[in-house]
Length: 387
Image 1 (tube, rainbow, N blue to C red):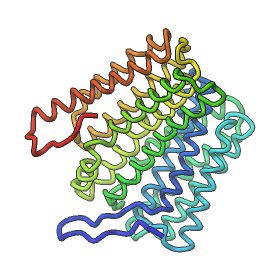
Image 2 (image 1 turned 180 degrees about the horizontal axis):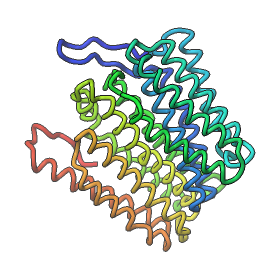
Image 3 (image 1 turned 60 degrees about the vertical axis):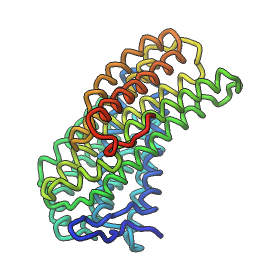
Image 4 (image 1 turned 90 degrees about the horizontal axis):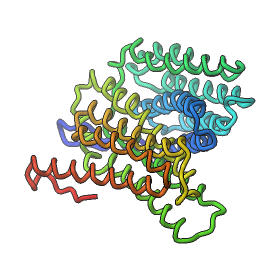
């Protein structure tokens, strides 16, 4: 079995730590929560639906990030570690199953699953983490226990109390990194970048799955094939935005940060900045799911906003992530945010028109960005094809 073991490097270069197959298995279970959130939002494209999905994704992503930090320091190499890791996966699966009715009768299941995920995270760190990690987690664990307690209490509480307690839990998680020092955490850049890249590509797969779900029961004709290919192309360009050209740059940028600051930079780039990025994937997948069956019809305001807003959130998160790591040129992507939002009125006329416009905006953004880049460096430094 592959494990997150370091690969020897030349003197002066940090050893490479790769993601284990068990971690990839864990990510597949985590993405089941993304699938469930997409289903919830597609069924309720209103402000209430956005708030519910935003709250649930926020608290879930906090603990997903916690497990990425955990396996960065503690490889799941022993039977005890793998058993505890599997228990955490079970907690995530319980949350995924509860998400469709998390604001109803299944709220306590969501809260209990979250509490288990939290407890396993802290327990594994304390059981197998190095001296520095254990010292840091002794401060972090009580803080995480507070937020997990709020999520559990919210899952039990009725009505508006659930919104209030889960909002409080999310707010507490956002400020938690400022309540204790991060300098004791040792971040292996190669593992950290690869782990988050894998979850992004798996989540993008959800937008492709949404095409199949939206097409279920529809006659397979040229119109359906055309809109399905457009949805796939849109997902492809989001992949291009995140991965092409800067995949190695992110690893190098994170590795170049001095160890005392690296944990803070990693948190900002892969914690805070990745929240809108992953939320954008969920929102876009919900929009695609609705658009597939209405290719030549007009969309509702909520459906059109989901398509344009989902891509805009993804681009915004990508810009924030790149600015933290100082990679790429973000100004063109900020203009891309404006461009994709401008496609929303087209969706109110015809769904396929908005899909085409979104693809054209992303293509134009990437071509302009590429030409600006190749115009400022030599051809030997840049050998990147057009998308």
